[in-house]
Every structure is written in structure tokens, then in C-alpha cells.
Image (cartoon, rainbow over all chains, first blue to last red; front, side, top):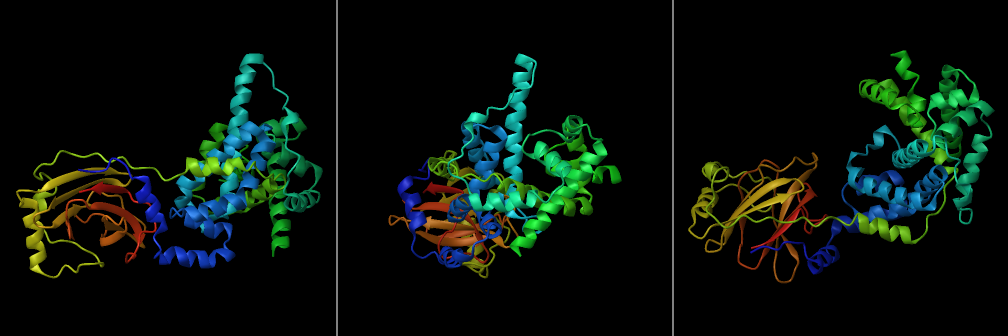
Length: 210
Length: 219
């Protein structure tokens, strides 16, 4: 005889076993959790770490998805998909090859852009034109004001062309070819501005962090 | 590949055409310089994301936690039958048990493995887990079972598989640890009504499970 399922009472008990030295140790360290630590632990199927990682990173993911898709509904869907992917693929995260913030926001950006490009291509087929984004659906109420302000201040140090090229690609979901065309700027120049601008932002933000 | 190197920033912004992206990713595999550059530029992109950070509605967390609730692993049972094939064929091989509860020292253990496999009341459970298929042959009259983990995926270098026996009190008791590839892990103390479970744990094993079981099977 065998159970077909891992029954709930058994599962609940499993998680409530008092003698869980490893978890207790984790909880002691919790006050110093960095996103990198948390993501590594998520890779070991640590639910508590996942919950904390969500608390720390969900504003980043949701805000980015909202900015790109311009729809609360899409932003919620993307956020959920992103965290499902984070949960299932966290074991692939390697702190040596980038930060957890970068890892998670890369997933979030890709998913958001996919949503936009998919709906654009659908609408383009249907209407033969580029849709104007719907700006009425952007949440203005609760923002992570401090983080926003710091980055906006960093952005103000970029040249206009650097900032435009980066924002059109990152928030507008445009390819660098489309950016070059829209700005009437050679491809090589756009690539260089994107590179210099991104590196500069990181430099400024890292200087602040340190 | 100077041309490819120029595409790092656009790649970090997901701003390449699909063909270019494909080519760049192939290049990235073999270019440490681009990998380092990408790590830097993705950091900058993540900073940009911070400029629009917006707290999601509170209900979203519940949805996310529910959507990632560790999956219940369906257990497929073969009908009880005499062991055949891959387990029976290796009955004479030495039990490979790494660390953990039993040290594979005595010949008595090998004898017990062979006895379980040939017991007239031997029952076989075949399970599909997320990490590969396993087989457990046990005999309640001998109060022992033999676990075959040969087909399990490998785990991290610091990790191993750990077996658990769960009785009426629902508290998992360690039933030993083994490494993927081990074909004859002896599990003693088998009786009807117990459940056998398996988790991945850090070596050399833990006193209580710290991860979700890959399977739970009632015996």
C-alpha cells in the first residue's frame, strides 16, 4: 500500500519538527540576509528565504513590469511568473557571476518585454500600427520613493543621448536598432552610449552603496 | 570578436534582435571578458529597475507563495512482485553506504540484502521522483528493505540523499544516507504502516529533514 500524495497533515508536521538545527541556524543569521544569501538558500528549497526574498525584491519586479507593460494586470502576472521562475531556477544562481538583484531583474525585464512584444505583434497584425501605451494604468500611489530618487539622481548625470537610448530600450522594450532609427543616430553610437550609460549608473550607485 | 563584444550593453537591455541574441549568447559562452562586462552592465540595468520600484498589491504574495508551493510528487506503484532486472542482478555486489547510520562493515549486511531480495514476502515499490526513478524492495518478515538509488540524478558536491522512516507519530527518523548511484542501501526497521521518504540534504546528513521529500511511500 502506498500514499498517492504527500498528505497535508504529514507535510505540516514535517515543517514543524522542532529539532531543525539547520533552519534554526539560518534564522539566527536572518537579520543579516542579503539578497545574494537569500537567493542561494532559495536554491536549496528554503521557503522562508523565498518569502523574505519576495518581500525584498517584489517592488523591483512589479515596478519594472508595470513600467514596461503599463498594465497592473500584466504586471501582476509577470511578477508571479518571475517569482515562480526564481523559485524553480534559483539553484542556477551563481553569486560569482552577478548579484541576485541583477539576476532577478534580468528575468523580470525579459518577461515584461516579452509581454509587450507579443501584444505589439498581435496588435500590429490586427491594426497595422504601433499602439500607444496606455498610461492610465500606472500606479502612482505607493512607490519605493527612496530607491527611485537615488537612481533618478544617478540618471541625471548621464548625457541626454545615453539616458534616452537606455530608457527607450529598457523601459520601452525597443531593440537598439529601433532606438537608433528613432533617434536618427548611427547604430555604433547607440551601442556605445548604452554601454557607457549603464556602466556609469552602476559606478554611481556602487559608489553610494559603498 | 570585437563586433560581438559591442553587443553586450544591448544584450543586457534585452535590445537585440532574436538572431543577434542567439549569436551573442553563443559567443558569451566562450568569452570571459563579455561575461564580466555583462555582469557589470546587468547591475546597471538592475539599478534602472530600482528607479521605478513600486510595491505590488498585498494579495500578490499569497498567489506567488501558492504557485510555488512544493509540488506533491505523485507516486506510481508497481504491483508487488519479485524483484527483477537491475536490482536482483546486483544482489552479490557490496552495499555502498556512505557515512550515516550504518557502516558497511559486516558480511551480515550483505547477507541481509540478499535475503531481502529473495524473501518470499518481498514487495517492490517503483517510484518516479523529480530526480529520477527509484526502487525499494522490502520484506516485513525480515524487517528490512533494500533501496536502489542507482538511477537518481547527481546532487551538489556537498549533498547526498537521505532516507526517512515515518511512523504513526509522523516524525521522520533518519534511515540512512547514500549517494546517487548507490544500488543497495539497506534500510532496517521496516514494518507495515511505516512510510519511507527521501530528501536531499547536506552531507553528512541531518537529524531532521530540511527540505521537501522527493517521495513518501507507505509500506
